Image 1 (tube, rainbow, N blue to C red):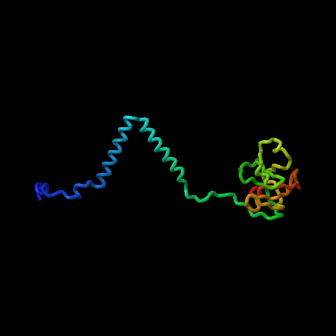
Image 2: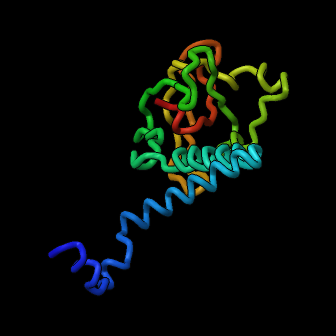
Image 3: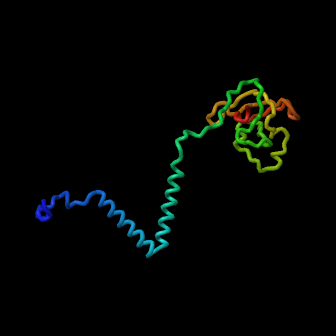
Length: 170
């Protein structure tokens, strides 16, 4: 066919419609042209939009998290009455921190360390590693054996009995 014959043939519907690639290229070029116009006409709006986009993107990445499963909790050791254990704070890595002992199970929930006199009473704050013997258990807040009544085995408080959180008895 010659060029003249091609010109005389009717144009089909497929030839009139732009392809998807052409449509996408046109849309992208219009979008970029609009962005450049905004950048030139109103730079505060442009850079504010870019900043907002980055903040939202960072927030989405932070909230995506990982599929690492549930947060691991400190496992409560199955304690037995009459067995010897040591006091070890479950929520501390400081060797000098103390473990709080109270006279009534559940009193730890109302524990406030802001009073100086509360910290200086004898046999209330025991050093980590203090040997104790488990004497009794108490349930609290829907958890079985949350508190352990212990007898202190060494030091100036030897023979004293008090309650401690079960997670602090190892």
